[in-house]
Length: 142
Image 1 (cartoon, rainbow, N blue to C red):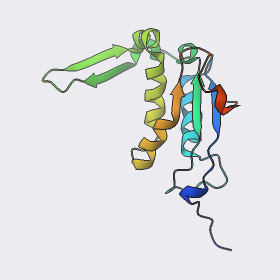
Image 2 (tube, rainbow, N blue to C red):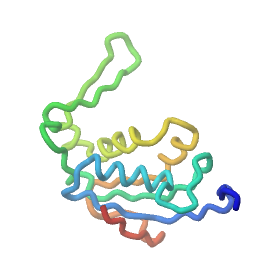
Image 3 (cartoon, helix red, strand yellow):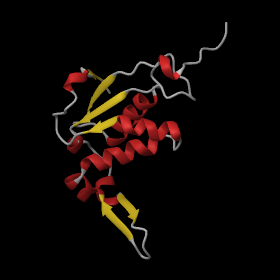
């Protein structure tokens, strides 16, 4: 028996909804990354993009465990000399909780062509309403 290799034309993509309310940020991000890569499928092939679409709702209600809310910082660089900007996760979760979830998922996806393509299939919403009702997404339990 030969090893099964998925072909890009044969990949069927589904839509999944992950409710992040009351869940740890890492657990939500890990579930989203698994779905985006398609690793939960029997037909997973590492060199083929066989992942699904993911909708994360209630991003503002995600929980950071321990003292991460006070100690963890989001650091970026503007590109100018001395242009390091840092924002604590307390501020980030109040202003842009979607970015916090997106950064966590991005850290769990490989930095390759397939990984960058997979990140285009995630939609993150601050509250419990989303615009993808027409796609009939299935609920994914953590």
